[in-house]
Image 1 (spheres, each protein chain N blue to C red):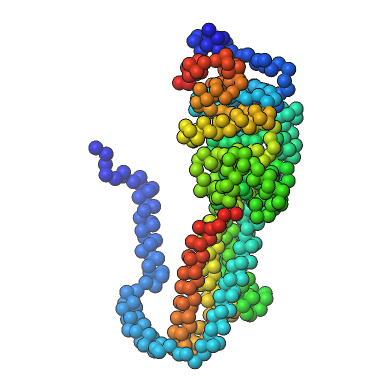
Image 2 (image 1 turned 180 degrees about the vertical axis):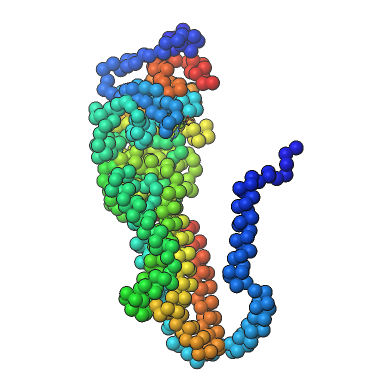
Length: 266
Length: 271
Ligand SMILES: Nc1ncnc2c1ncn2[C@@H]1O[C@H](COP(=O)(O)OP(=O)(O)OP(=O)(O)O)[C@@H](O)[C@H]1O
Ligand SMILES: [Mg+2]
């Protein structure tokens, strides 16, 4: 009869203890407090009561700010997708030739994608506000860069995962590398491209709201001002508008996804 | 009793009746001393040599893992052999540059066990891809962008495999037999001088398999296309080929005209 547990070695045991200690310490570091949670309850209720009813005073201005927010997300995502496709082709393993030059492009594009992905979008927004000034263009750029990091990585992975058979068949027929990528790899990766792109748009819509907080355009700045002036009724209106926008993008995204994936024949 | 039979019932030396009745014909494909191993693993091809003559139909048989697919892939340098020379239509491609290699490949239609069609695009687009060796670029990527003459040509190829009414059907919505016929149409689109088929009917039911083999036979004999195919079905190999090559653990152990062989001779070869 085997033991129910394999007894851990001494090093393994120490590692577990250290890990557990770190997790417990992290609760303290994170300021986790049940008492604050309990006393925060009434404060939350008070806040909510003061947000009601949402104010309708600035609805026209807010609507146009909301549209601008979505426009930033849309344009940033489109630019990001267009730029990330060639980067992803260079960054996908086994897609390009094994020469010295292509090795450099491979490493370079991987590094760029990793940099774009790992630096948070809010940081990019701060950088672009400084370089191109306050306003929606800074936000759009931040979203584009963030989208390149996101789509570049997942486009590359989905192209690596494509079945090799069709590519081999076209190579055997004398097709060039580039033709093979466009004829066999990209069509097969298309469903995953569509899914990734729609996720990118959802993600961009959410972040375009936050980017406004640092002055990079959109409705975020309105929210910040409303909060700073304790105009909670206005803030509630803005939060509800954001909620509706994000929900709408998600719904339309998933409908579009199904439509496109069922797809017509080409 | 045939020489081949002798071999399988005890004789040690391989039976070689090369060039049987075809001594003067030109060779389309000549492979000499091809060796291949993967990584640090054992040798999969241990000096394989064979040739295929113009307009000849040759069947390559051998058990699972004998090295048939590897031999065919190495012959077209879809994977690089470690050693050996390959002549294709009089051009030495074993050390040729990429563009020479591509031009030579254009004349060979390769049909795989799994049809290897591009999913999600139409049968017509898949057939048009057969022309990529001749002219690449967006005009050859899809039927959407293809010229009128290219589309007509592709449709004619589909017609020849009896699938012209399925031209706009998505490749992943075709049956196994239909897919394999589309793959053959794609090979025909190359206007090949030779077709290489790696177990083309292994994933098809007996009736569909028979149809595809008949199709190969008809097309190759009608148009004088050379055919090299592998098969696990000994009877099929005998019925459709002029010559049989058998490969065992990476070595060619039999090379003889099909009419000198019987199914039992070959059956012993498996196992
Ligand atoms: N890419 C590869 N990497 C490592 N080993 C491989 C690779 N391709 C083939 N092999 C090995 O080479 C040997 C021969 O394989 P091959 O596919 O040529 O056999 P086959 O004769 O075509 O068999 P089957 O009848 O099953 O198709 C097998 O042992 C296989 O494991
Ligand atoms: Mg095989």
